[in-house]
Amino acid sequence: MGILFVDNPVGTGFSVAESDMDIPTNQERVAEHLQYALQCFMEENPTFKSRPLFLAGESYAGKYVPALAYYILHPTRSTSSSLQSQLAGIAIGNGLTDPRTQVQCHGEVAYSFGLLDKRQTAHVEKMSREVVDLIDSDKWLRAHQRRASLCSFIEKTSSNGEEFLGHFLNAPPVKRALGVDENAEWISCRRKVKALMAQDTMKSVTWMVEAILRLGYPVLLYQGIYDVKDGPSGSEAWMRTLDWEGASNFWKGERNVWKVKGELAGYWRRGLNLTHVVVAGAGHQVPADQPEYAKAMIDMWMKQQLEM
Image 1 (cartoon, rainbow, N blue to C red):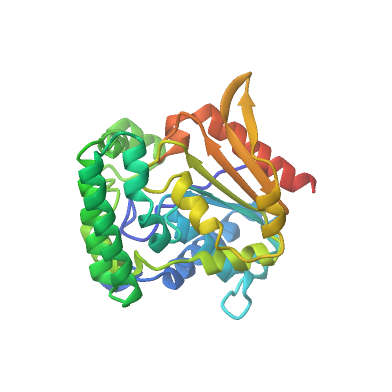
Image 2: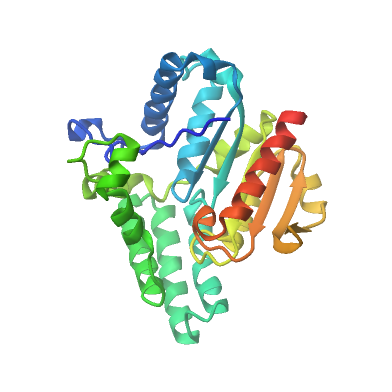
């Protein structure tokens, strides 16, 4: 098994855009770039062409992953039959997939965690309604800006560990180990990329997830139980809107306790080709918070798909 990490979209991480025109502004362009990158990788490393391909990502990859899979699976938009035959499933962790639905859960979840009091929760819920109204009016940029203000309000009660990741990846020994130019700088997401992708932020891709499920491809959706923004509550809310043949079976199924080495690792539910896992003791980034549970989960899921 091999793992390929991609800095996406162009302009994030160590990747650099030659000009602003090279930075994507929507999911279709993102998918085109990723698809091309995968095709190039396969050509340079032909031994991987015979291996099953699982697409996985977290957070905003709640859009990138289904977009890439969707465009791989639709020949009118795809130029690579090889990738179509290789695709074996997709996994999305704490994904921002349906912003309209998910933003309406922020206040309730933050209050249940004790991050907000009643007055603050009412303020967040008012902001959420404003975001929804802007989305329904196709005012995408303003909706993005209002949601950013809402998230900033909640984040004042918490912290962000991403700054530590930047320090780590920009350390000279790490750059050498990765084969990165010593003058390159790792930046989570450059301002220009954020600005150019802003119109896309609040658009839903649930229809893509639905299409992938309808085609019979395995989908794993997982969230850390302590994620306020893209955790179980908001994710389950948009999952309930999915219309595919396994929906009834999925929701009628039992929610099961999951243990790793005798310890509670979370909860899971499965129906047809959809698997949902809630990971105990984790927040927005499950592999960082609970690496052992994350590996056990992804290994178990991939093994099940390959044995079917």
